Picture 1: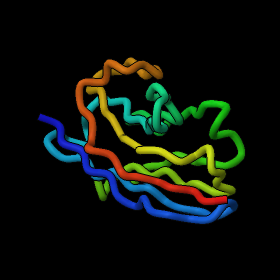
Picture 2 (picture 1 turned 135 degrees about the vertical axis):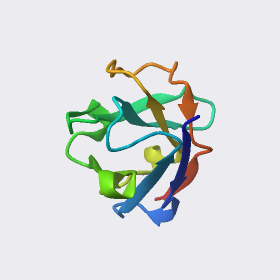
Picture 3 (picture 1 turned 180 degrees about the vertical axis):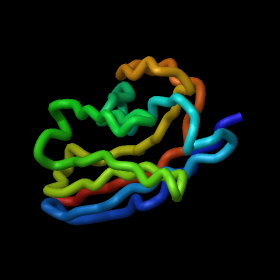
Picture 4 (picture 1 turned 60 degrees about the horizontal axis):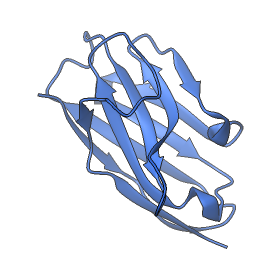
Length: 124
């Protein structure tokens, strides 16, 4: 059973930066086929995808992340990261990581494993 735990959220002013981490356990990060992603949910809005990364290092990001957010991973630490800069108040929300132990890497909500989330609040 995959288990994920996010960290790194907090309160920042507009224009600030944060780095989120998501530590994975319960599966072999080094040898598994997987797609891991960062998603977020703002108050009153649906959960939306931000960026994806797979076991080969292929990665993708949505337009909301272009030029500001970067996804990466450190397999030795069983961890993926989301480096965020130029944060805006609209980036406020709960940020989640998710994993699918398959080669299908899409921005859908049907990932079977999710972390509990980490809150980000960006003030003007």
